Image 1 (cartoon, rainbow, N blue to C red):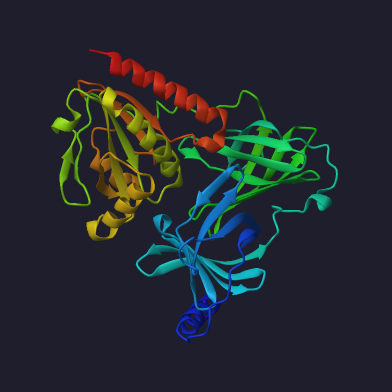
Image 2: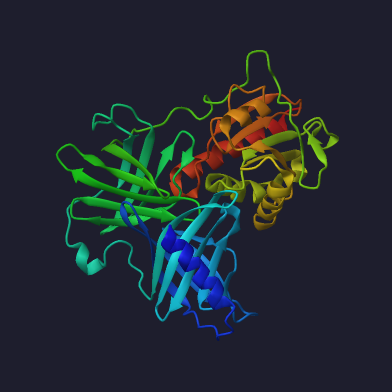
Length: 416
């Protein structure tokens, strides 16, 4: 921690020294965070902004995803890449082909979590260069019944489903869980071992495992964030599945509708009883600006709403943020609305503590996941509740969700 503090002070002093700013090489970088589990690699694509020599457009690269970061700026001899939605940033000294510094994420007030960070220009392999992966007969493509936190070393319960696609030594995929997915994982198969990682400014995941071809089992560990760790075991199973996402959150006995009335960042109160929602199919999106899975759902719902709002549908976003104070969380909600071009109202409903979120919505048995999606018919009665979200990183599972969602909405919209 002392080294990180000294480094940040050094950056601030250098920024004020009046020295000419170094040039950031534009193109792709192999970036790594140095975690307890070893190097966590991801890709960065850095491009010059067209109007400002000290500003850069940056994308995090994981599998098929090119995730835009906020505009990066040169400060003294360093490059700062902010990710404001997730209260995190990369800050690194520019040194020729290298960027060296830290990733840090704010947790509360002025408390930060940090990890060492570096990136090398012009290098695009993930874990191991192609020439060093060697030949392998291991192929991990398929669905895997997975148990995180297994105490027996066996898949005695299924609390996740791994879905992998391997081409040569290159491996992509994700894990589906009852509360959402692990988004885009990217990595390699080396010999009998799996290596996968993801960094998107919020998710910081590193997976390693050994494959036993005799039992078709993967056994390994997962490192998350700065200090998280869990063991995991997975068994190849084309029929692996999770509990029904429509059964985890439900209305309490006797309840038929959802009562919700909360303020927008402007201070205006929005209620499901407002004329805006009367006689319309209404989607209530329980989300948070800090939540990458909510980001994936919003990327789907925002354009969907623009295409379909004239059919008699509305959406209300209930944001549960790290702070219940509007002065802190209101700007984050507005920033999220701007980033995803959201046309529907998003209100501050409370904090992202699940127990507190459950108290804010007493008609529900519990809020067990962000996001959770609640669909009300034209009469205001709850017809469907979906816990979690299978994002585009899940491939066919995302496609299946979109098809089921559209069928449900077509049915409810057609009702008198």
